[in-house]
Length: 411
Picture 1 (cartoon, rainbow, N blue to C red):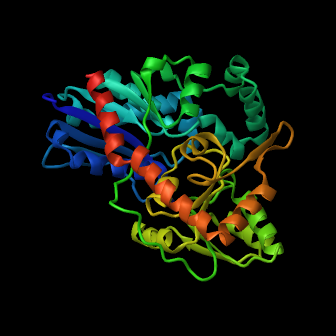
Picture 2 (cartoon, rainbow, N blue to C red):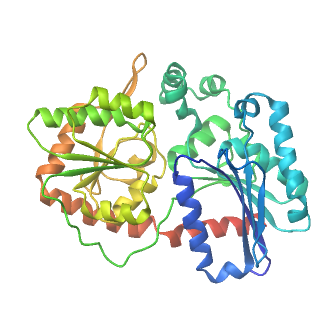
Picture 3 (cartoon, one colour):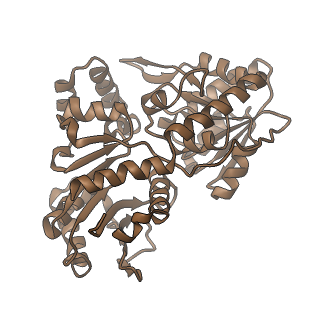
């Protein structure tokens, strides 16, 4: 690679919780910096934030010329989400602020990791030239599960029946994926959504799985005497937390003892609701924890649970596999692609009803939990196989190789 590539990552930083995209960007920077190609790459960061303590843009230039910018989102964020004029104006202001830093740069690639920032990527490409990459970390229509359940159910029913034209009309997406020069997605499910619904050409899409640092061997596990069940990540309804709690209640009613630990942000109102409805369960709220603490949890828990009702290439799933933690996952989206039932994980089926929506099969979920609690051989087999699968498919090295190939094809 002879020319210097300027990769500009566009992202939204949230003050109250850490996301899988945050983990991806950390891993990506770490992986690039360890490569020989790093001399020909500059990785710039333009991050918008909802942190109200950030009142003015903060822009720094590193010794090697890399730009790091933190841009505050407007206090009245709903205005720019709903009003096209103010959203366009906001993006133009950011472009004007960045002009002294990017106007002379060549071989620019604007890679946006939050769909809200597609307009910013288009504005920056129009102003400074270069290419634009959509990095699709989520399937946007599935966030209707929490925002508009009736809309989610209609979309799910249409997509499940391959009524893609009707789905597109109902979705009313404002994201014009075809304006991007390339799209990186994390699963076959996401690629099919792009090709079937938005008619993005297949040669403009590549599946690049998330990756983590490779370890030399399966870590030694130190399980607690009482079964410890671990959930990691933001606690929300679309993450399947209530289906999980219902399954745990069934497990307890059948006479099994356990300790359920939650490592992640749990909004106060939701925590209050959980406490009221499930006070009979032994739940340990750990809050947002450091990665060092997570390592300890991954090494000592009996098994992990990922009950999401929609999910892409989950970093939590990769981390659990990396640390040899056997897991139960929902048989949905990318999780269904990442794991094989009874080989690398136990998969819990989801059921959908056009009127009542989607949920986990709680009876089978409870059965999976009990199997994991009582069958040590099963836990050991899943632990070993999941780690081997991680080594074959989800290393940081593989993720970096695929991404660099995309960059080189674009410039």
